[in-house]
Length: 107
Length: 226
View (spheres, rainbow over the protein chains, first blue to last red):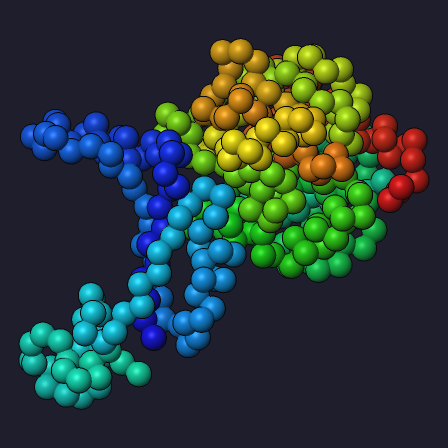
């Protein structure tokens, strides 16, 4: 099963990366953008989704300074379309565009 | 006393830490895969970029086999000192309170700073006086110590802040100017400044050597493990 883990600095903790991005935006003509915060996205595949919370608490996030959210992906949500790529690599029509249908998310 | 200086893939200050320890007592390097530290009485977790600082500084190093042994040693009350990346590793491992965040200024800072001794009740500061100033260099990108308000209050009340940046010397935006903290028992200490780089007149300051001298003095007074 595929999942996305979104990790970000806890509310109230200064995020200098977000500030730097925010300050750079007006120079590019992007006015009116504020409260920018920069986090981290981890893509993974796990056999046992019930252990994802534990995995986040112990390694992916430091609960003292970071919050995390886990999004379990169904086949149709696969953002990279890798299910389709893998299927193509397995001998199906390599010219077939788009995502594989039905079970395209992989086993 | 034999001081074990940990070496992770990506450590870079282990040789200086080893040399600093050897000025006061015996010392040897400990490879991160060593699970049994054998004859080691005290540990220094040195600076550098263990495991490339992937994910968060110290996040992966804390799972090294040698760190299991360090946790056991710490639980027995033996002295453990984390310097810079070593401090980050000990915080990630839960052996020290708080966490280290990216510097408020986002820049890598490398400069000599003045720190004040806030507690002489630890294995590494017993030979120092509270309020004394030490001149020690810092060099880091993620050195902004942070703890939630209630935990900071508890740490302050328990006297676990060991070093503070002197007024005007906070290089990274650390909460309450904290430069170093100890565990409740005072045998585990971590700090962002590098005492191992201030042990010779050639480096402009000898102040860092006093932390290692405190450790050796303590060892000479008490049998190991007591």
